[in-house]
Amino acid sequence: MIPTVIVYYSKDNNTLTGANILAEKIGAKVVELKEVKKGNFIQALMQKGTTLTGNPWDEVKNAKRVYLMSPIWASNGVPAMNTFIEKTDFKDKEIIIITFQQFKDLRKSEDVHKHFKNIIEMKKGKVLECHALIGGKMGHFAGEDYIRMQMDKI
Image (tube, rainbow, N blue to C red; front, side):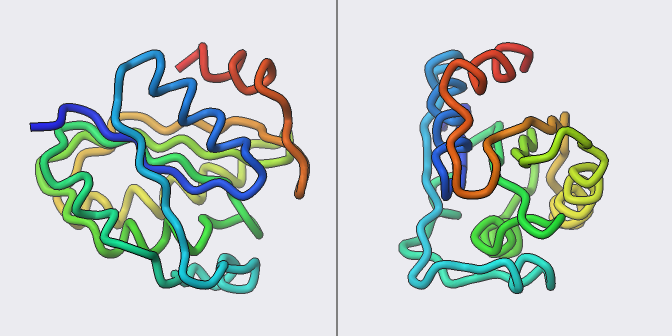
């Protein structure tokens, strides 16, 4: 059994950096979500998914704990993470959700956390924690030090 897996999607390297920092800290396997065709803000706004390459849901089959790390687009989860959550069997898994957004008002992240949590719990997973972090503005990397400072609180 693989005890812990970090699944992430990153466009501007904020979430990628957070995933790598967390993996160093806890010794977890890291799985990147890759799309056949890049998802967009309209898909995010409508809470739609996109087609992923490979079978990333197989990477968490034997995991006990899964960290889901995703940026927030258009006040919603990104299409890649939407697809991953819809297609993954979360039965008996402990889930921790970590989102990155560009604005300091973190209230919108609560809606994304709730949406993800509802789907995960319908699939018999248990969400242990949700964390909202701040990445860079759209198209910008916030910097490793800034992200590390936030990740150190998790």
